[in-house]
Image 1 (cartoon, rainbow, N blue to C red):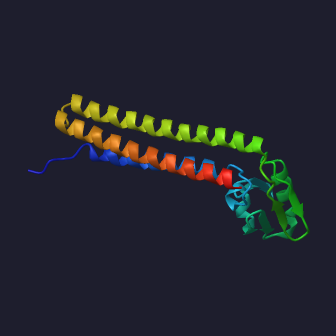
Image 2: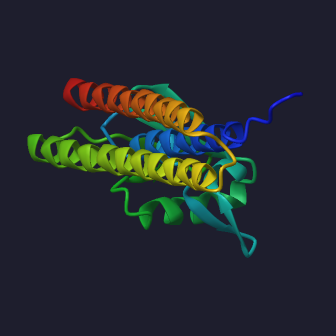
Length: 190
């Protein structure tokens, strides 16, 4: 007789959600302006292109010819004005320079005050990521305990699965901490 592993879907779901939380944290880090040119900083800016709200990466090619410049080349030259306006009102503090063919954005130098603000902000983003991971651990453990109460799994399987959930949690929190350390280094280097 084959035994059914009722805890595997819970573990798989927890890992999938933890991966999503890690990706969301990394994306938040990418969206923070550190003085280094990155297309990730602007690719999600929304542009009103022929009455359709479209991400910038959907209406133009984006590149970084050097570490201080982002170049935006629209596929339709008539979109230059609306792209320039969208960047200006994005709240990112970027100044677009439209030469009639492409838009260039020179990344401003970070002040010491801005570096301190960014450091606080990335630590907050990392902590939100950790809290999200811990909440997912709690959800998974509750689901496992519920299976134990209904006698779908025994106490030993419940305990070993909760241990695996903790191992997942530790692994994903470590990955968030590594992403934080990388971002902190990036802020200090610029």
